[in-house]
Length: 151
Image (cartoon, rainbow, N blue to C red):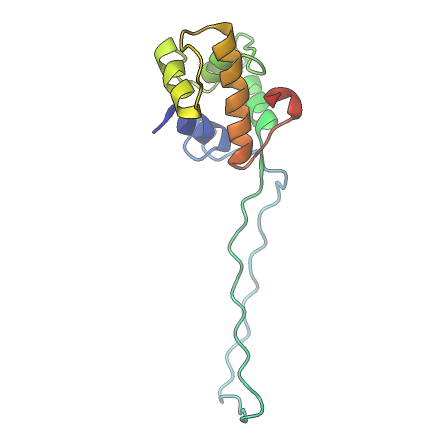
């Protein structure tokens, strides 16, 4: 799995440390269960040529609600309760929060995945760009990210 894929999975709860318990979705209520359909009639309905059969409506596929990235990350930070990590601005701290390897090699790989064109030397410029690019990509992939985290 790509480095960004691991970040996304950890935040969106697909295979991350959240185990799907806290999805960060804006609607915390469970989806309603469809009501049982009435018993089928014992005789087939009669139709005439003037009454075409109506198509049976199909159930709409479940729409995935946006994940509140800031809320998820804040929740992880609170649950861990360890040393304060500056995940809001630091790609290294963000990766540490998500229990991902934040080594320069992994950040170089992430930079390549996200299209960074500068020197992949671990500079502040690269790390700041990476953090903002990750937040923008999370938003493109179904996350809700406050402007301050991606600009």
